[in-house]
Each structure stands twice: as structure tokens, then as C-alpha cells.
Image (cartoon, rainbow, N blue to C red):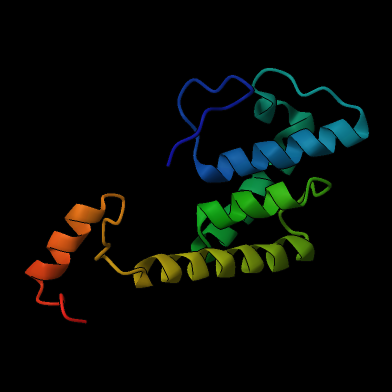
Amino acid sequence: MVYTSEYGADSPITASQRLAEICLTRWAKREGIKLGFRFWGDNQFKKRYAEQVVAANALLKLYSEKSLFKALEALPWCFSLRSPKVKSRVVEEAAKLIKEEIKEANEPEFKLDVSQPQAFAKQFKKNGLEGL
């Protein structure tokens, strides 16, 4: 999936770049620093941004984008993807997503339309279930 940069990238950015932007935005806010247009090219932020992109790519090899974004959303104080709390939260979010997928996969495909009783009765008769 591609994302849009809040800081003026010419083309869409990757999930790892977007995650790094989120982390650096939080860090800059905490430090009282304003991130400028294409801040990742500025010597002050270049190394920190690159470190966060590398950390994001490492996590993306193991977990889905969705679980990473949900984990960061749940940890609004977090400004580093290398934090142990991020990994534990990502694991929790990934488990939730897997449970949801399993639940959706186990839902029955056949659903009776009971909104119109006459149609329901016809369907019952048609399937030979009238005498039950």
C-alpha cells in the first residue's frame, strides 16, 4: 500500500516511510522542533529518519502494515519503533487481526432472509423442512 507524505514527498511513500514520519513528528513535537518541508534531507533529521525506516522495515517483515499502524495509534506517546513496547503492542494487534480473520472465515455463508415471512415459509417448504 502507498501513503501520502505530510511533508512534501514528490511521490507516494511506503508504509515504512510513513511510520518513520509519524515517529519523527511525535519526537519533534516533544522536543519543540518544527519539521520542515522534506525534513528527511536535513542533516539534523536524516540519521533519525533512516533509523526509523530501517526499524519499520524490520517490523514489516514480521507483521502486517495494519497491525503496525494500529499499534502506533494505541501508543500516542511513542516516538521510536525500536521501543520494546511497540513490538509487544504490535504482537497484540496482530493477534487481534488474526482472530478477526478467523471469525470472519467461520461465519456461515448461508443466511435465511426472515424479513419477509412469506418468502421464509416458501424457502422452508422448498427445502423440505415444512414438517419440522
